Image (cartoon, rainbow, N blue to C red; front, side, top):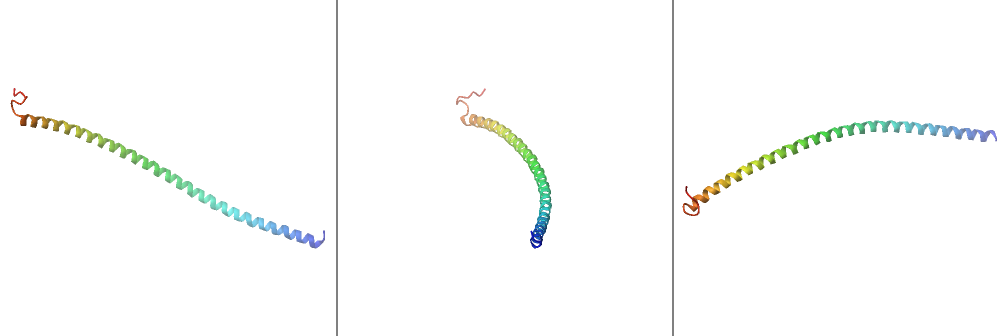
Length: 105
């Protein structure tokens, strides 16, 4: 191997080393960015998880209140039906009058 060939090989090796170091620097920069993004994503996921838990609590309470309101409405309808049936009986007795199958005793 001539001195010129050795110099070319050394220069090639030095260029490859420089390229390797530049690539390594970019990789380190990218790794730093990935770590920062991962930290932000983790924080975002934690916030989202907390929000979903809060929405679940609110939804559960809304369903409970809705069930209570439906139960109260059903009870009111039951009492209204009873009162309406009583009124219908009174009106029927009044309309049919004495001697139409109802005793007046």
